[in-house]
Image (cartoon, rainbow, N blue to C red; front, side, top):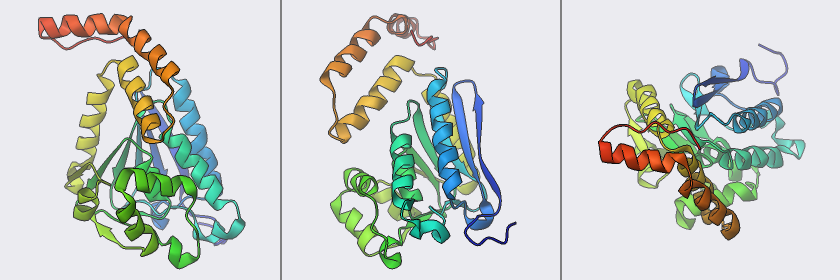
Length: 258
């Protein structure tokens, strides 16, 4: 614990990599895993480290305790750089090379809702809830977060959550598309592991290529030249031949990423 009210108790985020699967864990459960400025730097470093490890196909984001994350430490929110720092992290997470999964184990609040939206999949528990108190704090939510809200959840839901600071429960989060899947709390880990293993078993060039270009299409940043290059690489790959042969032989394919 610390006497500085702007510094969160608990431990810094941790990264673990096992084979094709990487896991980032937020470890400040005493304060609902809120993020300090140094945590944002650490998380961006983790993402870059994972991006550089070509064997990693899946990146999961977990939070310890009863909540996923409560966003940026309010004690530091008036420093003038909070929004830009959080936006940089969310944008980097969205652009991460591996497929990303947010394991929503409870409450997800403020900017943390955008971190979750920046992930490719969001699995939540029946006790999940979310709200964004920016308007109550006098904080104008940053541009990248508003863009993700509108593109993923629609303008009307973005207005409801950002302007009126509405609180949604797990059923509402699922209905609006924030959560892809809702499970019992005790089943969260197993469901994340199941999806992680399923994704890690896909052909890397096809899996990561589609993840990248889907996000670019959604963001209006589609690059025809790069897409054509990635398609040509996948079409010429050993993995495509292996996938076709495994399909014919009715067996599980053994992909090599080449």
